[in-house]
Length: 506
Image (cartoon, rainbow, N blue to C red; front, side, top):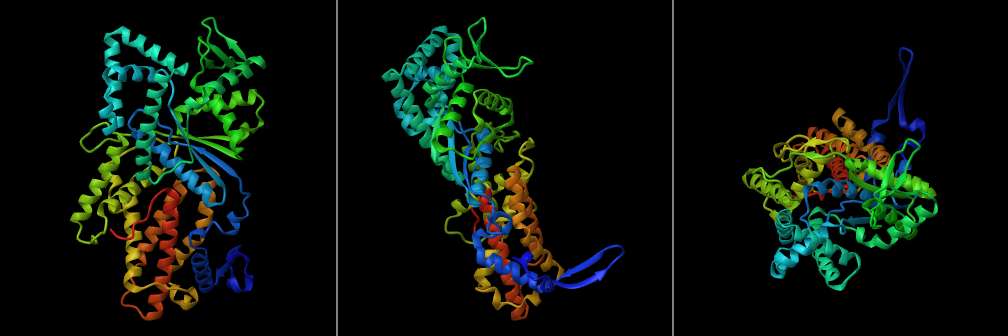
């Protein structure tokens, strides 16, 4: 709106320079217009701007997280979960219809080993009390036993063969593994503030992957090696991808092809996004190349968002960690530090608050750089209460909320005098608020959360210069409170897009 105004109102002064012309913006109008827009649009500020509101709306499908069932949620899946959630949040915020899919690793020879192992070492009682821990213990036990006893490998192959034949006893046990895994994962996703529209998995595509193999054969694209493995040549240079075992069963790649075709039929998304670590980049190049060879023009709508690895993510004791351990660790450190801090407020639910602060710390650490980059994890840096951290972002939001509780809120921008917001720090802050839609647009274009993170950290930095409100004349106090409300609103909006729940007290 500010950009569409009468230039005579917007420009307060024009002066010539050395080969240039200087335009001075009417700063009072700038302050009033920007703050008015923030107050009117609320959670839609930036999204309702001319830059974003005119974007065509469509269907977006995001596949992310995708852990292997019957295993505890490992930290390796944290990045995919956080990044996929951010992308889905952002696309949904700008008006797209978003479908969130969790494509579970729920099929393969490892389930033959686990099934055979559970029949020998499993306990239904332990499975009920601590499902994933017990399945993890069984898997370790049967792996060790199979190295010493070849008969166990034979039992595992036999179990998986029966599983592929859908024999009742084996299918019932596998279904139990799948159900208890999803139940445990949902608890973990609730802690992360993440939800899914569909829990899919490799097991869904056994039959459809056979249809893909038939299509490849009909089009003359399927070639068999001497060993009987089915391959597809991807280029004249001889690049190739394996799509079928020698016994005719499908591979992970074939099931991904079947899943892509199925999703396009079912959802017809304008964009289908896969969020995985960069080690799978060549896998997805092969998936997309084969889909093109099969004649699917919609392959152009498929996109892989790769990310780097987190190095050194362990508990403070140095244990190799599961995600649950990381979240517990972050929460306990925040609890320790807030309990000893002199400025801490009395909280209704200290555990829930510490969980939100700890998660904010992990998310900001993860999103500060390019997604493709590896980064070194450091507990000391992640949980710092000062500097460019998630903890300090939460502290800033809580401080602004506390200010509103103490001093009251401004209900209408027309109640304030914009002449009271003409000092350089206030103008810098207002100009920064004005740029929020540009930042959202940047993140939409390249799906990088770092633009929003850096914007919020800069907002926090500029805001900290301006936080004094007392003792000031009433008109100046009201103007500053209005500015701080606008800052808190945008800070909360940006944090929520990143997957962070802002806290009001800490």
